[in-house]
Figure 1 (cartoon, rainbow, N blue to C red):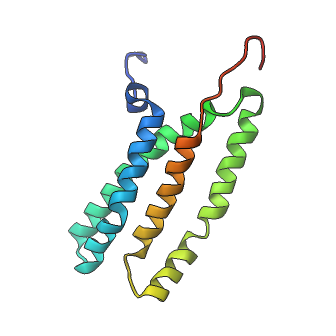
Figure 2 (cartoon, rainbow, N blue to C red; figure 1 turned 180 degrees about the vertical axis):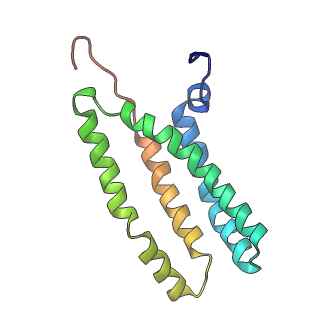
Length: 141
């Protein structure tokens, strides 16, 4: 059984930018309410439901983001550009546990990680709306 090029992924069908916008809007609209619902009366089934929902959103976003990020960077600096973007995101995102713990402590609201996720998604939405795919000029790499 050989690999078939007939299989298309969702981002090929609907477009990467549209998928990124949809995923970030879903995260903005549902992250905090989902966390609030979970912490109001925690249970295993609620935890599983919220975790699966957030995993679906993350999968939608990350599956398209990796490809889209390479598409917006010129080929001659693609490796450097992708590595820099990934490293900066890791550096900033690495403070998430500290930020979420501080938000919970300051507000007394255990659902604040959902608000932090919504803020991060808002940043992703703005970046997606501003990003433009790289268009090569004839003969230039």
